[in-house]
Image (cartoon, rainbow, N blue to C red; front, side, top):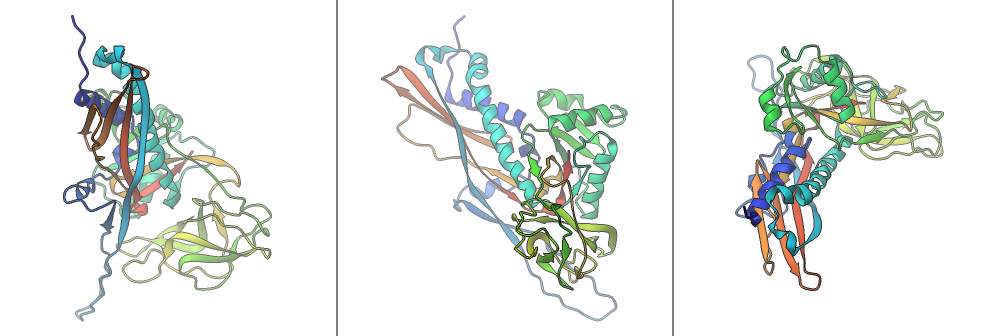
Length: 403
């Protein structure tokens, strides 16, 4: 039996199937914006409109409120590729042989890079649960995360997922009391090739795993520090504080903290949840020579109106509590609704002057394969490219699960 020659389309489709099987975070993101980058071309940036929020007025009197629409940009700015070469004598490999020797390891690295890139968005997520230093090992870890999403009015529409590193994934599997009751989906396991997603309805979550879950290293906040607010009635996206160790890198971008007596409210009813609002430092913060520091943070403190998120402004002399131990590193597993993160993976231009080119799409993922012969070495140089952009669109719909 003769070998099967490899066409560009066959190779690209095989690569896409492998990419999809190996992405954990990417396949749980919102992919609906990709079509906007089609024809006519809009460039490399797209503004995503956020849902409007309104307040309710009592009584029969009219109280017109301004509608202030908000948007966030998503920019297609990441191109990554895997490059390799093979001898012309290897062009007659069967597809399985070619996939095993070239495509699978190359695309696995590309998929890991996509997930790794998406994982960096954790620094903008302020909701966090789990015990720093403890691998999630009980149903309560998931129920705590689900509670956080509920408190932020995340839709409960079947699009919530838990993306865990392998340690947390298998630890939670071992903690599962009854696979039958929790909806073990064998068909999904077979369909996904056992490479990731294979469990639905695990406490309302689609369970997935990724080797690209990042770790977060906490700042030096506890080095002789007290960390209290400095000034009454503080609102907005920055917090004036003092009481820190002098001239110290007290917080790292991504550090999660609470402020005493600043409680979260339900985004729709504006009723206090009875839980301290969590905030995240949006940049590294160092104290000055007097132990003072202004912390840029998310979300902003908003105490009234349609976008109110807390029940009170930050008062003077209130303690800050940072999640985790200073200088310690913790895995940042994710529990998220699909609409928290947007991912666009768009087609690349197809150049002229190459002897082999193809671009295919598989379940929203695009890859381009180019090949060019090198007469000096009798080798064929090949590259597999992906182009994408990412954005943490609605951080309130995601929660970090510390490991």
